[in-house]
Image 1 (cartoon, rainbow, N blue to C red):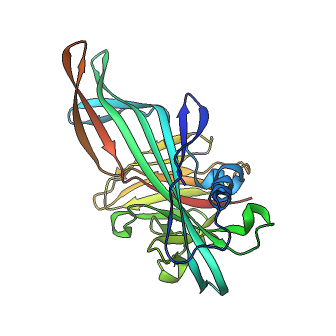
Image 2: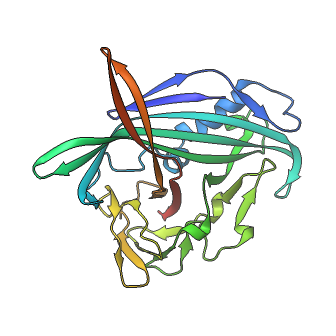
Length: 302
């Protein structure tokens, strides 16, 4: 199933489009769109689903930053979301016998403009497009007459997740965790894998931090990351160098209104050049595209 969402000026419009159902192995006895829709309903209508797969990943307007001899800032103006649901076959897994699993792929695309500052003037330098993909992994643990037709959320996954690319997060309360998985150490047992080849963080292994805890990020790379700070506003976390590592820190929000918070790691970009004809005149539009940003969650101990 593909379901589209358009987001503009803080208004979300749901659009239901063409049905695409795929999977592997044998489907459940009852095959209907209600299974796919109920998993999407979990993402849209429960606090856990809304927070883990939030659309709020970046500031709507960034702080200015210096690059290639100029200062820039970007503004996000609209976005689009669609879901793809894949139901797997029946098997025994995770201590359960003869159950089904499923993956919901959540695809978000955000659109905006990158502005360049020259003296007292500001001009549009590039159009901006950010594509983010996340996954929700489900197991069919109960009968159809239960909530969400018996499907239960089991794990969280993201695209382009290579642990060698990212540094370490150090909570003030102790321990550490990486962008690869939420746990004290990298351990293959702390991830789960569906038969369709996706890797996930088991939801019970997402690291839990006290309210208002501090977080320090340390990396050999000057990564760009965004997080909600103590006032609940999502900001770019500035990093400074000590000669061997880049380090930056922030205090997480002290409120108890959320179960989960998200940290966004910005990936590399490329630029696409489009030529369009407007009023008989050819114009060139250059779009800066990012498609490999990584979103890492942590739990809030409420």
